Length: 257
Image 1 (cartoon, rainbow, N blue to C red):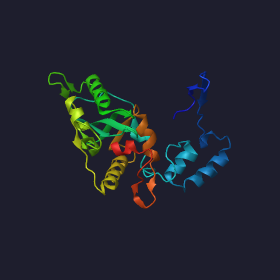
Image 2 (cartoon, one colour):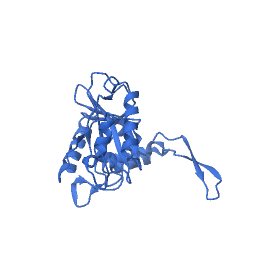
Image 3 (cartoon, rainbow, N blue to C red):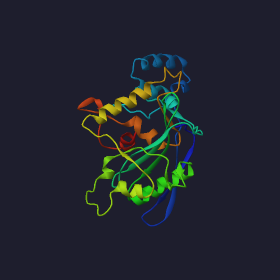
Image 4 (tube, one colour):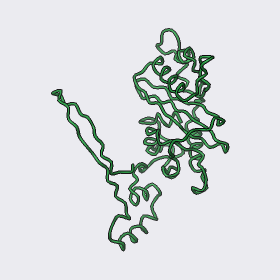
């Protein structure tokens, strides 16, 4: 996002040879234009546009696209922060959206004294079984001091996609039981016909709860959670229901949130 950083990517060709390609994003903002008269005139035009279009055309922020459900609420300058050590007395929990063929997500949260929600870490996985994911969660929580070593179980719990308790085609234990055997407990998340719309409204309420940037927002995401920072602003509005985000696509971070 800050630009002017060389990104190097390793590419393996069909011949087996390895090449490297580089890219660099150079942000172009309205203020960079040397014609000050044009800047003032175009800034006036932009002032009549929707906020996400102003951010793109004036500030070079293309994270929020046209038709985004959270376009007018999301502002990375307000909702993204540098990681810090979470006070031990803040309540903490985790949440998840299961995925195997499609990406799955698990995230860790903390709540401050004013009921503001901080997303502190994310785990992205795909093509992994419950055993692998449970071991990864366990190691993360041991490293974070969220594991009760004497009792051999996590100090946390939280909501997870009800699919974890289903037995579709599974032989033996459910995924929820696999996690529980590893010392990791979950509770089934609420899932009704209106859940998606209602929870999206709650996310918007938290994003907008910052008093014009004068106080901590109701939802803050650590900068070390790039997946949700990338995908949340791009979630489209349901074309059949403007009050609800579209279902499908790269929405696993939203479902987890």
